[in-house]
Length: 396
Image (cartoon, rainbow, N blue to C red; front, side, top):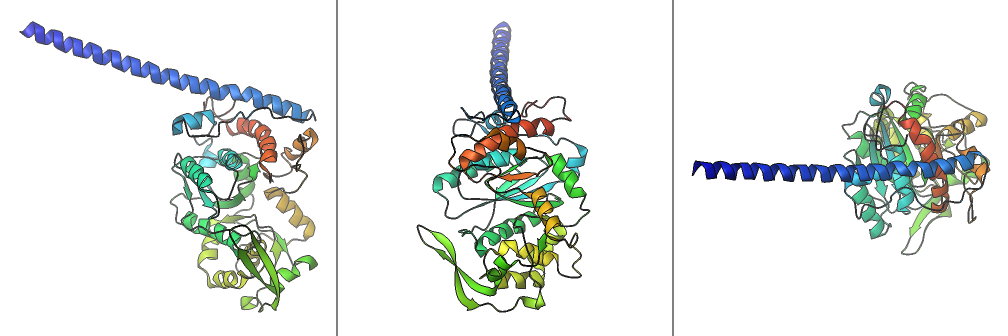
């Protein structure tokens, strides 16, 4: 009887061991398969970069990055899409960033942006336009569910280009980010068609140079912009279109005798200033006054930053300095993308990828976004991982 019991126990132990070995080897094979697939994509993107910097025309023949979670777990997706999952330096660990991302379409373009700016020590708030399709909303939610430091804005707007809703979308995310436990130093606002051309570490080093000041460059209103705050504007939104119209009604003067400045809607703000924007009565009154102006995001940040005595301003600059600082934040325009063209000329790619030009490029169409971000990914990601001996999620 004792022998039968020992034999049974031995058999159970042997079967358990065999099952463990089988499961372990299966998982190991799956991991290796995904790692091989992830690393093989680098050669395709490296070839694209070579052509671009040679000034040749780049014809994208396939998408090297996986853009679906439908048939993959979060782990598989992160491996195949080359996400960075470890903090790459002590400097970056000690200087976490926050991002707001305002999106309404083109999931693939947004996904490339998110992948490029993602770092585990940072925090990300994504504002989903209320008007976005259910399919788009579902895809974004599924993606963000894989990342504990990324989330959707708790309040959503139906965004109208040029209206107060665009600014409010950023403010909604800013409110959520201020409540975050991540001790971020600066918040950078982006849209879904942006793409970074500098590494996280380079951005951190650049922001450190401002020594706790905001980057909100601006000037007194040029002639073409005076009417934006002189007349009442209204957002119009229906099931087909959304736009802002100008009325003939004059606005009241700005609150508290504020001087209105104009600049860029894309800024980098300290956490202290973010709290000021959300809580101080000066900021709340300016926001209320701005609700019927045109493109208030282009005067709201810079006007608050230039209030005497607030001590957040990093200087008072002329037009030339303004243009340089705007360029340092974000480069827009047709220099970096070509509308409805069969191929994206290599000379424009090479110029846009010049590290001295900018750290965010705006590719306003999905085709242009793919042709910019594919080579930019291959160029930027090796720099992300320079300090690591081996990180299978990133390019080498």
